[in-house]
Image (cartoon, rainbow, N blue to C red):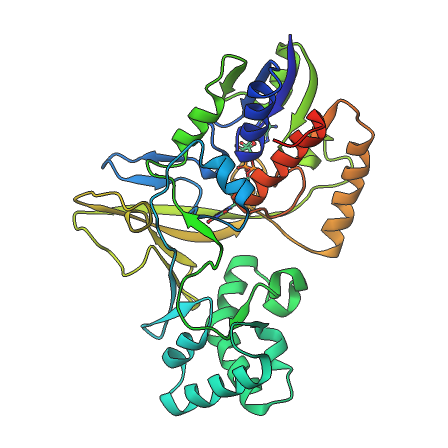
Length: 373
Ligand SMILES: Cc1cc2nc3c(=O)[nH]c(=O)nc-3n(C[C@H](O)[C@H](O)[C@H](O)COP(=O)(O)OP(=O)(O)OC[C@H]3O[C@@H](n4cnc5c(N)ncnc54)[C@H](O)[C@@H]3O)c2cc1C
C-alpha cells in the first residue's frame, strides 16, 4: 500500500517523490510510461560516448536561491554560460537581440543611431518587445524593429509554431525581445549551468530512497489497476486523464536528427538558430554545453512538427484563448477530485522551465506537508 502513486518521473514528479519520501517518510510509487526517468530532461551517452539530451537542449537557469540550493543537493554544476547565435545571411547574430546584435545586423552608422535611439527611448539595461518597437513613434526604431522582426523572428516563429508572431498570444510574442544591453549571455539569471555528469544522475539520486519504488515503461492507467495507493499526483496530460471529454489540448512537437563527427568542433556555439527557409530551427552541439571532453562531437538538428497523439511527443502547449478555455474545463474537473493532485507542464498545460517545474513541486509539497522545506 503506497501513500502516493505519482505518474510521471520528470522534475515535477521526481521532486515531489523525493520530498514526500525523505521529509514526510511516505511510501511512494512513481511510474513513467517512458522507459526512463527524467522526463524531458533525460540525457544519455550515445554509441560514441557523447552525452546527449534526448528531448532537446536543456540548460538550467534560475533566479531562485531556494530552487538552486535544493537541486544543488543532487548535483554539482559545470559553470556553462549559455550563448546563442542566429545565423543570418551566414553571419552570426547574438541572441537575444541586444545592442551587440545591431552591429551584426546593420552597418556601423545605422547600428550607432539605433543604439542611441533605443537607449534614449527605453534606457540602458532594459528590454522592449519587437512588436512594440515596430509600433513606436520613432521612425529609426520602427524601421529597426521591422528588420529585426523579419530577419530574426518571423520565419523562426513560423517554423516553430506554424503561426506568425502576430497571430500568437502576447505571452509568447513578448518573449521576442530587444535588449538595451551589451554582452551576449542568453540568460541573465543569478544561477545557470548544466549538471556535471548530466541530468539523469540527478533523477537517480532524487529517487534513490528506501521509501520510493520506481517503475518505468508503465502508464498511469496500468499502474492504477496494478497497485494499491491512497492518493495520486498526476503529471501527465490533463485531457488524457479525463479521456478527452472536453476535447484535445493541442501541442507542437519536435523531431531530432543526430549526427556524429570525428572532429572536436562542429559550430561556434552549443546552439545556433536558423531563422530562414531551412526546415530546421536549430542545430545543437552537445559537448559545447556539457563541456564533456570527447574526441568526436554529436550534433542534433531540431525540426518543429505537428503533434500527433501516440506518434510523437507533446512538447509545447499552444497558447491561445480557445486552448486555455479547454484547459480551464479540465482544471475545474481536477479541482473536484480530492485524492488527485495535478502538476507539471502537461497537467497544467503551461510551458515551465525546469526551475519553475521544481518550484511548483516544492510549493505543492509545502501545501501537502503544511510547512516550508
Ligand atoms: C525542446 C525543449 C527544450 C527545453 N529546454 C529547457 C531549458 O533549456 N531550460 C529549462 O529550464 N527548461 C527547458 N525545457 C522545459 C523542461 O523540459 C520542463 O521544465 C520539464 O520537463 C518539466 O518537468 P515535468 O516533470 O513537469 O514534465 P516532463 O519532464 O515532461 O515529465 C512528465 C513525465 O510524465 C510522463 N507521463 C505523461 N503521461 C503519463 C502517463 N499517463 N503515465 C505515466 N507517465 C506519464 C512523461 O513520459 C514524462 O516523462 C525545455 C523543454 C523542451 C520541450
